[in-house]
Amino acid sequence: MNTKVLIRQYDEPPIRESEILRYARCNEACEETLVLLRSCLEEARKVLTYKVCFSELPVNINDHICDFGFLSFKSESLSKNLCNCTSVILFCATIGLELDRLISKYSRLSPARALLLHAIGTERIESLCDVFCKEISAEQKLLSRPRFSPGYGDIPLELQKDILAFLQSHSNIAVFLNESMLMSPTKSVTAFMGLYEK
Image 1: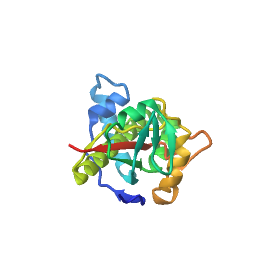
Image 2: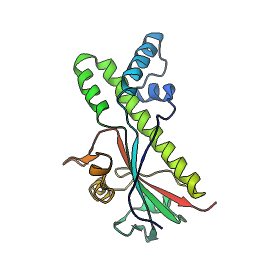
Image 3: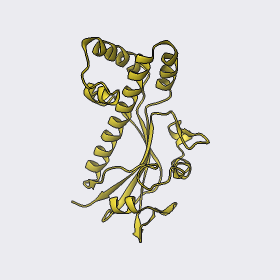
C-alpha cells in the first residue's frame, strides 16, 4: 500500500439541475427560476476547477478506535462504516475559490443569484466526490463504503486540522483551514472512504 499523497484534476462532472434546485429548496421551479439557474451555471462554469488530493491508508478498528497510522481516534459511527474494509481512501476535494468570490459579490447585488450559486457549489462538489470515489473503486476493483466526513456522526470537526496537514492540502490543491475549523474554499470536502473486497 502506497501512503503518499496523490493529486488528480477532473473535467466537469455531469450537471444535475434537479439536484441544484433541491439544494436551493426550489421544489417546483418556474420558468423564471430555470432561466436564472442556467444563467448562474453559465457564469459559474467559467471559474470552477475540480481537484482532489488523497492517500490510501491502512485501517485498524478495535473497540471503536479507528487507527489510520498517522491518526487514531474513537468513533462508533465510523468504525461501523469501515467494518471489514481492507483500506481507506482519505481525501480532500475542492472546486476552487472563485465561486466563493462570485457568491460574495452577488450576496450584495442579487440574493437570489447568490442562493443559486451556493446550490450550484454544493451540487458540484458532491458530484466531484461521487466521480472520484467511483473511479477509485473501479481502479482498485473493490467496493466502497459511503464516504464519511469530519463533523458528521461522532467524528470531531477538529480532525480537519490533522487531515489537511497530512494531505498537504494547502500546497496540493489550495485548501486552507480557518480558526473555526472551516475550509476555504467553502465548497471543499474531506472524507474517509472505506474499500472492501467484493
